[in-house]
Length: 482
View 1 (cartoon, rainbow, N blue to C red):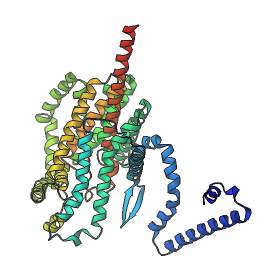
View 2 (view 1 turned 135 degrees about the horizontal axis):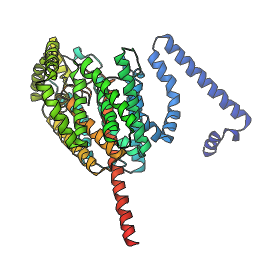
View 3 (view 1 turned 90 degrees about the vertical axis):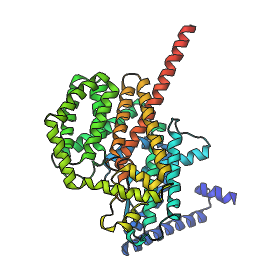
View 4 (view 1 turned 135 degrees about the vertical axis):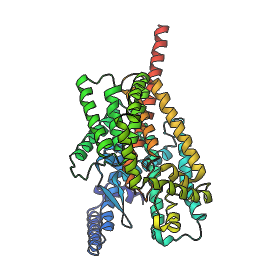
C-alpha cells in the first residue's frame, strides 16, 4: 500500500500501463464532472453549477491564501469599498458579499492554524475578553431564542428559510467582530497602515464625486458610514499629521468641505449619514487640541442656535418628522414589549422579526437603532456586554492617543478613536455597526466592516507605540550603562 502511495506522489515511478490507466481515469472523471455541470445548467440551476465549477479551485485558493495570508488581509478594505456588486450565491435566492466570503475564509484559516499550532495569536487588549464574551452570547442566543420562542408565532410569514437567514446573520456578526483581531495581527508595518488610510481616502473621494455629479456606478460601496471613514481620515491628514505640506492641507480641506456640503446640505434628510461624521470630526478636534476644539465650539454653538444654522436644523427636523422618523418612538416601545418577555439572552440573531411580523403585521419594521437591536436579539446580558465593550474600547483609544508619538501613529490613533466614537453615535440612528439582516441584509457586512477595520488599526498603532516606548527606554538604559 505504501509503495502505491509513493507511486501516486511520483507518477513517473509507475509502470507504463498503470500510468496510462491513471491518465485515462483522470480524463474520464473530468469529462463526467463537466457533463454533470452541463446537465445541471440545462435544468436551469446555475447557482449549483457555479458552485461545482468553483469547487475544484478551492484547494488551490486555500494553498494560495496560506502562502500570502498577510497580503490578503491587506486588501480587506478594498474588497469592502470597491466590490459592491461582487456576490456569491448561497442558495434560497440569497447572496453573500465577496468581502464577507473572504473575511470568513481568512478567519476560519487563522483559527484553524491557531488550533493546529496550539498558540493563541490574538493581540492582547483590555476589551478582548468582553468582545469574545459578547460573541459567545450571540451564539448562545440563537438556540435560546428557538427554545423560548412564543408558541403562537406565525413562522409562515418569515418564510421557510428563516433559520438560514439567522445563521447567515450570526456568521456576519461574528466575522465582523473578528476583523479587528485579524488586522491587529497582520498589519504590522507603517506602509500597510498608509495603504488602509489611502484606500478609504481615495475611494471616498470617488464616492463624493459620483454623488455630486449623479454619476451612476455599481462598484463603489457608498453606503453606511462611508462618509465618516472618508472625512475623519482626511481631516486627520489635514489637521493632525505634522508632515502634510501646505498645498496638501489646502487640497484636503477643499475636498473635505466639498464632501460635507454633499452629506450635510445636499443629503440633509439622511441624518444617520452626516451626524456621525460631524460627531467624529468634533471628536478628532477634541483629541488633537482642546484649544482648537473650544474655539470651534464657540463659533458653532451660536451659529446653530441663533444664526443661520438654526433655520437649517429646523428644516432638517421638520423634514425628518414629515418622513416619519418620529414613528421610531412607537417602534422602540414595541421592541421593549418583546424584550420584557425575552430579556435574558434575547430572541437570537434577527430573532425579533417574526415577533413584529406576527403581532404587528401592518407595520412590522426593524428598530433602526442598533442599541435596541442588540437588546432584542441578545438580551440584557448581550446589551450589558456590548456597553462594557464600548466603554473599554473608547478608553483604550483615549489612552492610545496619550502614548503615541507625533506623526503617523498619533494621527491614526486620533482618527480611529474619533471615528469609532462617531460610529457608536450612529448606532442611535441605524444599524451601521452590527447590521440587522431584515434591514441592511447580508450585504450590510461590507460597509459595517469599515468600523471594525479601523478598530483593528487602533490596536496596531497601540502595539507600535508601546514597542517604540520600549525601544526608547532600552536605548536610554544602554546609554547610561555606557
